[in-house]
Image (cartoon, rainbow, N blue to C red; front, side, top):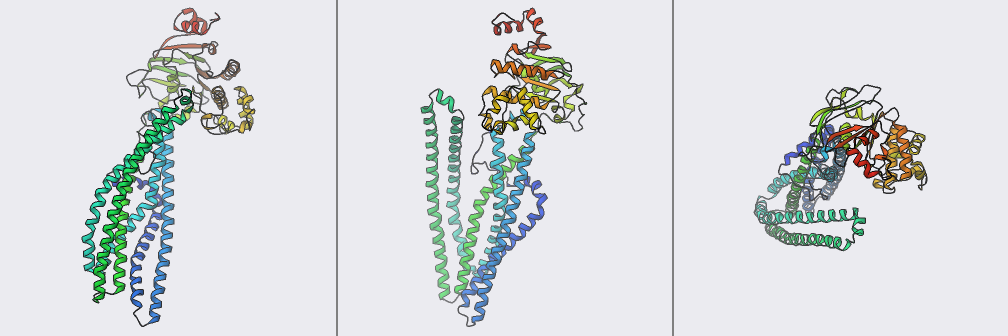
Length: 593
């Protein structure tokens, strides 16, 4: 799914009825909606009465009763005041309703997506999700907060205006209706061409934005390979194509504007000419002619507005379909209806029983194939092997980011699918291979491990992770802003912040996925000592390529092509002279295997 950055570029739906998907969000505020509808009907009715007041005022100039003329002016002023108050009231109610509903939709979408498993994000781009939460909901805000009320108001004005036009002058009404097809035909024909060109223009704008975003996010790589010229050329090419599409759109819009304005004014002049002859023949009054012209303008404006709003409603219907689809998306990993609570205190006994797993994005290849592994409470087990052997998959399945196709995984004797994910994940602290640093302060990043931790506990965790020194050296110390994705820190510093976060969590199960891979020798030694101390009394699974970090593990499990091929202590595995011994000989160059 491609990410769309423009409201005008959102795909439309032929089923405007899809807007019914908004009813569950509107229903709690039905009282507010009813008040808004009442204000809308009032303002539309007052708008239709206003031309009658204008006619009375104009025709009143010929009336000898000056007091009656004053009353007409006063009535016209009162109607205008009522229209102003009603319009303001309608705007307040409708806009407030739209903002409230869209806020609820955004919150519901975020709540839904935040709990989805990684398998869900393999099927849809994160950019598309963000686009739905922002662009699609902004479009719906426009519709609820403006378009729907404007559409209903214009429908009332169109129907009421046509009736009052006919009552004012049936002959002139017939002439107006004869002119309408001559105006609508070019609007429809050129409008289709204009929409196609607008879509093409927006597509090129989106391509231009995507190309610029990709280049700027990778600007160091672009510069390192002296690719600036080619990148500028690519961006310039896309930008020129966008301009060419825009030029064609502008030309078509200009032609349509000329035709529509000329035909509209020609029709108005023709109707006024006929009406003026009727006034001269005393067939109608000047006030009646002005009243008719005002109604004709109101009806024409309503038709034009409805044609524009129809396109907006179609886009909003398409947005609603996408939002409802996201809200109703099925996750392959779900909590049970009646979850079993993880026994407390947590012992940390882990068991994989004949587990086979394939990633949804690669269903033809087994990441794990019949793996059975038992980890005793408090045991430190290292998972080693070549890249892609299945080591990290063990941790992901234990966190229940995915469910295996076959086999069983238990924690303290309870199968993971029988528990609520939030329940057993509270017992696990994870240090991922690519540490995630949030756009917040260092203190807030570490406190992410346990939100109720004190400042002293945060700093103690940082000291244990060998992060205290470089954090205190930052401009504001622990309160320094680390930037998006932690751009203020080096790779090793990010990893130490992530380790401090896990230390602060103080969970009975510790998962380390290449936790020291980005550290220098001195920091690795300090962190390794902290991890060894932290592992005491905890069940620890360590994924590592650098075998020096796992030599002291209680047990080392060797993976290859999704299977366990050996397990034992460091010395036992070296003596077996298998895959582990070969890996060890490649890494230890001083002979101390």
